Amino acid sequence: DTAVSQTPKYLVTQMGNDKSIKCEQNLGHDTMYWYKQDSKKFLKIMFSYNNKELIINETVPNRFSPKSPDKAHLNLHINSLELGDSAVYFCAAASGGTYEQYFGPGTRLTVT
Amino acid sequence: GEDVEQSLFLSVREGDSSVINCTYTDSSSTYLYWYKQEPGAGLQLLTYIFSNMDMKQDQRLTVLLNKKDKHLSLRIADTQTGDSAIYFCAERDTGRRALTFGSGTRLQVQP
Image (cartoon, rainbow over all chains, first blue to last red; front, top):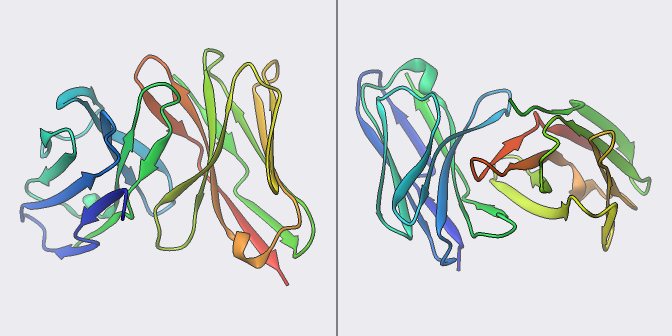
């Protein structure tokens, strides 16, 4: 059983389109995250939800909107895609205490 | 703000030990982590250390923490070709409940 899963794994789309990435975790953890990894492998936090409540919202364009329908799901919707949005997006889940984060396999987004 | 730094590249021969270093700036960090990322894959949690510890060993992995110098290292004993990957150091930002990652160290293991 995959602990944190993301769909799709690859997403190729044109500038200006709107797309969504889905994330699901079966770990029962309270906190979920979205990270962006650029072409130089640098990882940056974008958003975090704790029990469906937004707790971290970094300086991310408002074209990016996270949605958490329940504790096990955190989706990322992106409007009006731009070339600079091309990256790998990782979802992660963590519990309280040590906050060990468990990552999904990533979604490689390519905007053409 | 918090900053985590790592050297970008390390090359070792199979069977040797690898030591990957990391420095951080947030003195209030409570947990520090090491993650491994293989090509095309997500990040795999290898180990973590609590800030009141100096050392943690887990099979071939040894983590050393020098809190005074804010220096963390990961030693991999008997490095194998399967250890080739990018290794990320991360610290827990207690205020935001998020991790701040270093830029990653690419480990290349030569046969």
